Each structure stands twice: as C-alpha cells, then as structure tokens.
Length: 136
Image 1 (cartoon, helix red, strand yellow):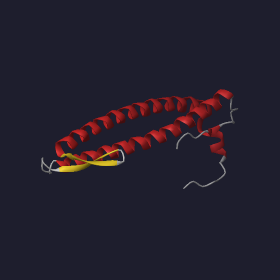
Image 2: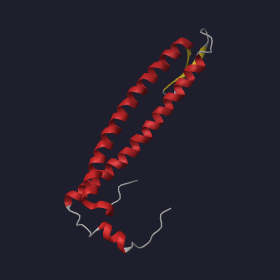
Image 3: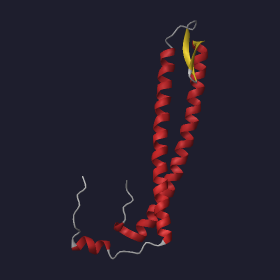
Image 4: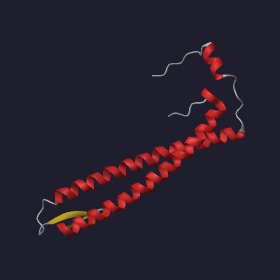
C-alpha cells in the first residue's frame, strides 16, 4: 500500500530540479495514457477470446463421446438447432479457427501498442527521470 510522505533531501537531490512540461511532453504523456487504456481493453478482449476457445475445445472433446447418429443442440445467434454430431463438430472447429485468427490479430495489435508505449516510456523517463511514474 502506498503511503504519502515527504521526500528526504537525498531523494530530492536524486530527482533533481523540476523540469518544465513542454507541449510535446504533454502530448507524449496523453498518448501514453490513451495507449495504456487501449491496452487494458485489448487485454480483456484477448482473455475473453481465449476463454471462449477453451470452452469450445472442451465442448468438442465432450462431443467425441456422443453417438454419431445423435442430434445435439447447437446455438446459432439466439436460437438453438438440433444438428448431427459430425456437423456440430465441424462448426465448432471452424469457430475455433476464427477465434485463433482473432486472437492472433489481437496479439499483434497488443505487441504494436506495447512497443509504442515502451518508446514513449523511454523518451519520458529520459526527460523526467524519477519525477514521472508511467507504471500502472
């Protein structure tokens, strides 16, 4: 837990004198903030997609135990349809492939975002040192 306290003279000396925040610095800080918010949203989407994929794979495993002649309910939109097991397995595998593609694109976006955030961190820490905190 963080506690509020006064800085010691040594800590003040390490930080150095306050630097003036220029317009370009403020733009970098704002950009970092927007990227950080977007990162959190993409991270949540990624976790949801991975959970969805895990659930579909589990269902697919369960369907391997079902009889081939049996019809099982499959949800399409808001409706359930009774379909043969083999058709449902095909639909599940195509859904898993779509999710894999989606996860790949989300991971690529996250990687780009984190690279840009790292560049901004480097520039801002270089300018402000310990007087700025960009860790969430």
